[in-house]
Image (cartoon, rainbow, N blue to C red; front, side, top):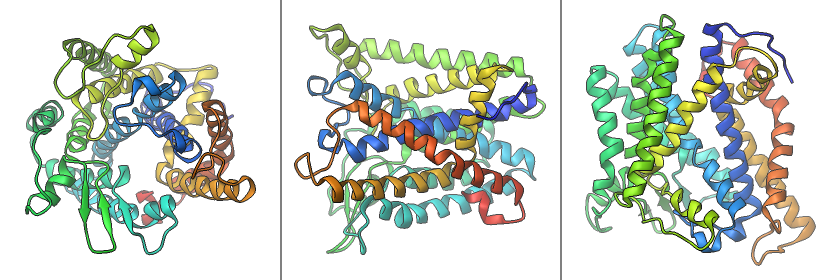
Length: 390
């Protein structure tokens, strides 16, 4: 574990961002291990409380932090990119090119990592696709005045659930664009290929725009004390908003109900919808993410700064880690099937969630050095322009 004796306020500003990104990447790893070795116990969206044990519920709920936090930090990083270079023109060009790159990556290397099927019969348009399209949208939106962009971002996040009842039949000209924007579903591309819009992108455009809007809090000239106050107010406000809306038991979510066991009642209260992410989903996850960012920034020295340094390694090379861990998991699964067979019906899988957590921890340790190597290469070789896209 690397040690960092003390971080200056300026360095801590960036370290906290990378560390938070690294933490949610590890939560993502846990969820993908679950999807690989516990797929015989699939979970719905939202989850079924009666058939989901607490550790499985906790594991999936932790993973809910991944996409919102990552998309928010993508918008924030876009603002910092513009501060570092020439401004909105460079930001817009970079967002468009990297967004297009991510869309292509989702359609090719990412999809193949999930299926190992060529040619594919199904392409799942998932989180990398959503981030890519959100970046392309932000490439246009950055030209708006910041107050206008902030109102638009909050309006999308808060209001998109009003569109939940709007659907278009497959024969309609609006079916495909609406499936991409808000209505999770299937797109029949050809007789042999179907597309699944797993991550409708409209809410994520709101989140990435919100991340860009909070960028000035993290500017080089910004006061750390003021930034931390804003993070506290925004994070606590989002969580209070979540509790208030959830107690009202409506708008964008199935109602929570009291159960005989208090743990199940708590699970029901925090049982929220990800596809597309409801307002409650985003207030909870973004609220937690902002408070974690605040906590990470307040770490100045001691053992916790070393922990942040480890997390920051994963956060400094997120796309490299994403691709690497998908292929490692797929190879491990195929080896397990070859060695042990299909022991859970049509799947190979663990008997309980404990081994899922253990596998995630061991994989994180095993992948640390390759990711650190790539993060170092990326930092050293700024003359290799394509590295900044990973």
